[in-house]
Amino acid sequence: SFKHVRLTGHPTARLPNHASFCFDFVEGESMLLSLDLKGIATSSGSACTSGSLEPSHVLLAIGLPPEVAHGSLCLTFGPENTEADVDYFVEVMGPILERLRAISPLDEETAYADRNECLSCRAAEICRHH
Figure 1 (tube, helix red, strand yellow):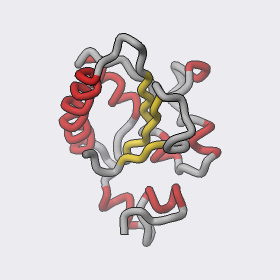
Figure 2 (figure 1 turned 45 degrees about the vertical axis):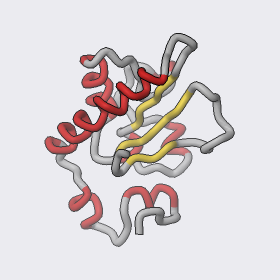
Figure 3 (figure 1 turned 90 degrees about the vertical axis):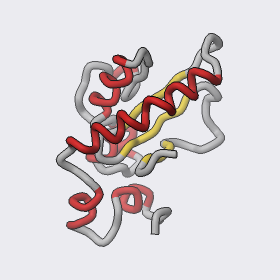
Figure 4 (figure 1 turned 120 degrees about the horizontal axis):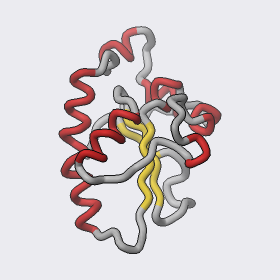
């Protein structure tokens, strides 16, 4: 399992082939490029905002801070995808997150230093980590 990640949107009332996540302490664009190099096509937002480096206005509207919304990643599966594809994503995503977080200027310590709450708590207003 990955640390500092959240599913955005409702956990069950959603399209069955789509999942959107926010990963703390990494930029969505960096994840996209890293996953593309591994042969995995993803997006960091809706098609109508493709090419924009701004965080999703929808994620901001639901209360996520910009530094969290910048770490969004959307996965959409089609009929040709298999369980092996999901396993491959999980296999390569861990090392990608580790590498990107190692070079990120924002980490758990600096993110929480200015407040008595974590980014996830601030976003959800309910602490799921403490």
